[in-house]
Image (cartoon, rainbow, N blue to C red; front, side):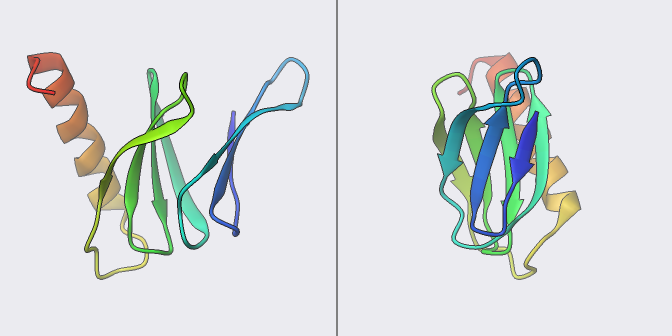
Length: 92
């Protein structure tokens, strides 16, 4: 399970123990949306950034900048689909 915080952190929580496994840091404002997908996690924050995380390694592997809106669910969904299509086609 994942929890996005106002501090910009994302907590990776173990459902069996309830403990925090990892803390992902990278947003400069609150995390407004989280969209998991296999080994990746897509997040959108108040900083106008969409970030792609490798959950196993715990690091940010890509980001999309320049969104005018603080939070845009459609942009997050399109970013996720595009990223997964590039992985599937071998272009990433």
